[in-house]
Length: 354
Ligand code: SAH
Ligand code: SF4
Image (tube, rainbow, N blue to C red; front, side):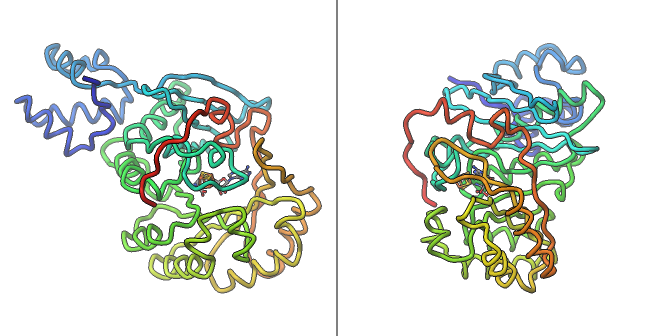
């Protein structure tokens, strides 16, 4: 039988396991501390545990589920992208971006994605499977270990890699909870951002849970016809419903929400569309991230020119909407999520319910 991935267990579950092995309860604390503070990645590293327990741990669990398939670094050295292979052969991507003092990690929540957004490499690949919480956590631990070797740490985590986090809600939030635990990895909730294509029931659930975790919505268009042509999920949850859920989120949590907008030349980058966006977002405590489209094989749109990007942004800021242009970092290494794994993609799997 395949060994279980140890990062799939939260503290309570790990404590239950050590209790089942008749170990004193402080053993679970030692284990937790070793895994998430020391970042140890094998039973052998736990020199503070009895040899027999280390052997039991090694028999029951794996500590390394992800193997590095490809590792790329952008020419400016500031973006590192790793394509990992999972034991079942599926591939996922994780990207580390250095920006001033920030060490931002962009992690995947699914292998592939079922939502089929036309311009997205992951969407073009189709859905393969959900990641487990441990597989989400291990992406973070991998980079945390590397950074720790240089006396650095991950400062921000965005769930903006492959997959739709709200289509794998339980595992995505379980991973955040685990990494948030103190003592342990101790990453503050506000340092996480979940990006969603706009699954309204999940946004409502997330609102109710009132977490400190940030929320970003992939909007990309203000009229339903255009949005549905790019993001098929819009047929299910149209813009008015989505924006209503976003307003409720902002009101209920008192938090600012982010909207993402990939600028596609002559598709959604006109001054008129920027004006419509400003009207749509009027009165919502929000921030807009615009990003020139990262071209993908399966989509023939082009990225907006610098002048059009600047023009779009100006309309928003003139109307009092805060807006930043995200620089496409690591473009020379296909650091648009999904682009590397896409090359390895095969068949699409059966879909879980949306
Ligand atoms: N599924 C989630 C999170 C992963 S995608 C979501 O859709 O929000 C992360 C972000 O990258 C989203 O805003 C998505 O719209 C954007 N994106 C996907 N493909 C892109 C591309 N080719 N160029 C620019 N942005 C892209
Ligand atoms: Fe999935 Fe997000 Fe890509 Fe859409 S943009 S296909 S939701 S990963």
